[in-house]
Length: 593
Ligand code: ZN
Image 1 (cartoon, protein in one colour):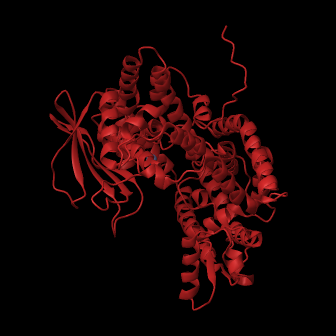
Image 2 (image 1 turned 60 degrees about the vertical axis):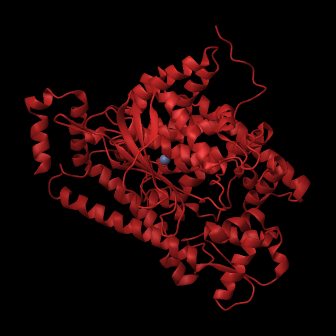
Image 3 (image 1 turned 30 degrees about the vertical axis):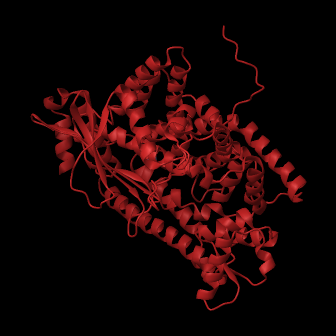
């Protein structure tokens, strides 16, 4: 009935007179009705509902299988010499795990905090191999545990096949050729072909750097670790050793330089300069004494307010996020200003000293403030598209990832760092090592993300369920095309790829890289401004345009229009590659005609 009313309204003269922003809201509502099957007639309508229900059940079972398979395997080490290389806290946790089960020795599991340190630090190669094999065969017929019938019950392969078939059928009912097309309707990317071309282009550009990373790792492993034939279970171990040898620094050292109050001052100052606003303490009832409240003003006018709740404490949800307490909207003459929550889980202050942040913490804070600014600086008056509302899912990380870039800007880092005892800023030499470590193996990491994204898109775009090629065949093809490290043939990574089989990322995994390209390219406009002789004026002007064309418009127009309005062209890959250290120092300068 509601759909019928929307349709009638969309056909009425009132609709024709609406401003573009409000037309967009109505159009989106109609689109979501259609994608939800509202337009289908019997029996398609009933079948669509069945498909939804069955897919939800399968996705649920998929993640339960991953969970059960993860818990089914444990490895008990009884010879202490097998623990060589592991840190004391890892060993202690393994000892406690064994003790809890009434066993002597050290028990390792496939939970990440137990698994990862083994892969990174265990010198004993058979231990790494066994753990790797167990981890990469979870929820498959190849699994090390459970065995036999029980393994078959946790096998996710049939679930993957059925899910793909159902998604394909759903797409057909809605009038699309494949599920990838359905997934992309509300997103910024236009077609599966566009996404695949984007991923291949990025793969082609990253490949030489990934090959260089791999060659360097092979050399190091052979020369320094006597590992001549580098296996899948050696990669994390050798990489960690190489990273230590090249860029040794500790998070603890860096932490002494980032005092939270000073970092917040630096962040607020940056926001004030870029967007011509003022941030001042404000008052409101709060839910915990650690919570603070602020107001954002421009020319003395209230624009929005936000809470910060930055310290970890018992019973608080872990992680970091921005959430909206309320959004901007205009009703009749009254304007409701937006209010945001900015929540992190930093270590609270101890011993009368201010709270100290790792550089990762600082980056997290900037990231969440990017989302916060998107919400707070909006100028849109309609609730459905103000702030982050109505922004395409693959574009919503643009403002947040954009802000992270400032944490790698030397002038900004220098001005907001002060050693907690001496007051000295972060030494330049330490900053340079942090920067190099950030880009460590970025070529290999990029290709790995592309492998996942291409696999996801190809499965949902061109794959024929129950056809001649299996899911494994598609994965093998993708790996032959982009991977520099091809895992063993028994690896069943796809059986625990929950993002696309049990999460919201089906035909959407590409969005990680997609949003990174947008944010890096947007940030490059600031780098260009900073390189000009009249930098302060140029940066201020660029900030104003970023505010006008991206931050303030929210979901009121397509993200690609906002990007083009800001940058004057389509997004390009170059800035992301450069920010990740993937530039050929020896490459000839491009000639300018
Ligand atoms: Zn985010």
